[in-house]
Image 1 (cartoon, one colour):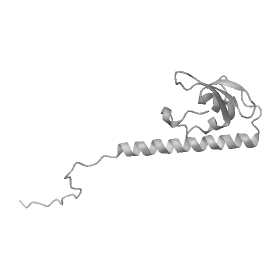
Image 2 (cartoon, rainbow, N blue to C red; image 1 turned 180 degrees about the vertical axis):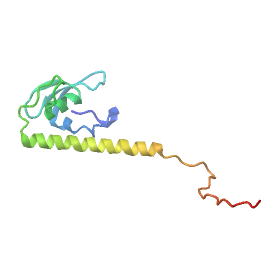
Image 3 (tube, helix red, strand yellow; image 1 turned 180 degrees about the horizontal axis):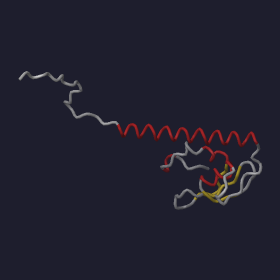
Image 4 (cartoon, one colour; image 1 turned 60 degrees about the vertical axis):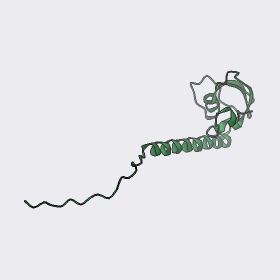
Length: 120
């Protein structure tokens, strides 16, 4: 059970949500959820950062790493996460480039006038 886009959140850049079953969502609409791992059935309350730490073996997030996350599953999850990160980075770079683009005021001529030497 993932929030839909109608809630105003787009989860296309968080593919690891596809590998857990959301049991309970926070009533205030925050990022925390109670979820169960599809592989080890561990039940955790937390946001996507804890899902990521659980699957990608990250320490310091107060969540146990997935014990059933074998080499093939780990490689798949890591690849999915890295692809989403690259896509998010590219979107941010494209948005920055678009913001840097400035349109010229109407009537502006891009042709530079040639300077002529004046004779004294």
